[in-house]
Length: 481
Ligand SMILES: NC(=O)c1ccc[n+]([C@@H]2O[C@H](COP(=O)([O-])OP(=O)(O)OC[C@H]3O[C@@H](n4cnc5c(N)ncnc54)[C@H](O)[C@@H]3O)[C@@H](O)[C@H]2O)c1
Ligand SMILES: O=c1ccn([C@@H]2O[C@H](COP(=O)(O)OP(=O)(O)O[C@H]3O[C@H](CO)[C@@H](O)[C@H](O)[C@H]3O)[C@@H](O)[C@H]2O)c(=O)[nH]1
Image 1 (cartoon, rainbow, N blue to C red):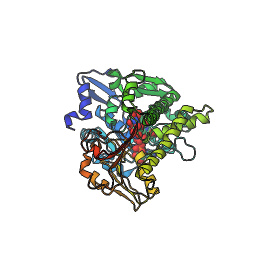
Image 2: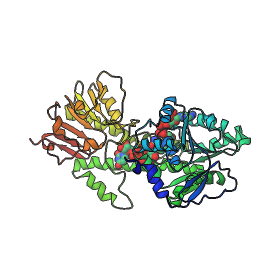
Image 3: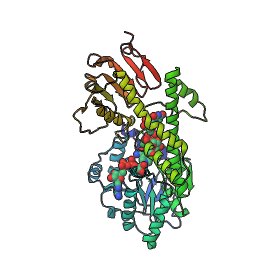
Image 4: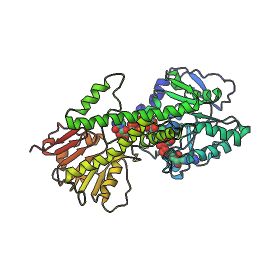
């Protein structure tokens, strides 16, 4: 991506010529620096982002791109060292340029020491909230530790903004703890859930469809709102609400989208049996504006670091409160069983015995354009195949998977992964799999069989009639030559 097209440059373009409303000191605020934004001078508070993973780093770079000064804190010393050198620890389009640009402008700094951010007024917390194996709910130990660290150094009246996805009631609980442990500091908790998608994270940051800010006190909510002034100026809807509503919005959004994906996957199973084209079915229903076209792509089932974790947490929260979330529970069950059915399908395609067979897995990331393999259907598949005794060779253009198993090898090309394979599984929808000419590996494979779990292989290509091709949502197409 050229520098002039970088997200930071894109932002600067739409900001230019605009006058932001935040040009004077507001009552009760103590701005620490001014910055030029379009034709206006914006008085901003000093911002600290705690936890610079997929969410925190995008938030930090995004806010810095607006000219805000951002201090980033993370426990991971390796990550911080990379970031200081301008090297993003994650793969995300446009991040490399935006990071280097904001560092060069002196707008963003990185440290492992929270004390270095003691002068900040707004602390955005974006630490992980992974699933607790014991309860099924989100683990809050990272968040609890981060909030304690912040509270120890934060100045009076600082606002702690929870960007992590947290169980409903978490922010209220944190507020009660701060009021009890640090009464003199008058620290305030605000919930501000994140809706970005990996793979389009910067684009999503700069083009939010809404911003949700939940807090018990209006002044704290307003201060968070000010940090998003550039978006409000552009007409992005702001939902100012209480913390429980804000936390619920995040879980409900992810659960609804996971339900949509699961719904189309079930219809896809039906289409496989009764005949038809699942992509046309999806288009046919998605053009109804009440349904909408997104999240109707049939596939191996949803994965990633959010949908599986957040649907499970929502179901757990429902049960804990005696209000069972039956739809979400069913969605989880269907999605879990989908991975098992896919394995069975591969087994029957390669002749029931996977033991000793070489299988090529194309794609490891949970979706295209990210290096994230957390809860990836492709990774589950690799493990399941290895358990069945298969010899697995994978290829992913970006993602890496360390598996300590003598029958697993990650290759550096599609061809190397396909060598000797009895089945080629397309598990992630990377563009290079879409356009790959499988004629180039015909002489290498043991059997010309592709299972396209993402429905991306071009079934009109010249080489297609020479292969057996199975796709999610379509019956097996047998080689005609
Ligand atoms: N990944 C996404 O697409 C996404 C989108 C929306 C919301 N979320 C939510 O945002 C949160 C963060 O997700 P992520 O994917 O960015 O996680 P991540 O694992 O990529 O990053 C979390 C970071 O926090 C750091 N950390 C942990 N404890 C810390 C502490 N006490 N002090 C400082 N740093 C600490 C870790 O070292 C890590 O770098 C989660 O709650 C997640 O559910 C994620
Ligand atoms: O039509 C579709 C759309 C998605 N998926 C799958 O669903 C999962 C989630 O995809 P996506 O939502 O694009 O990725 P995430 O980056 O996990 O983003 C989701 O989770 C984030 C973390 O909470 C939220 O911020 C985002 O709004 C929400 O879209 C992936 O396995 C996709 O392959 C499909 O199978 N078919």
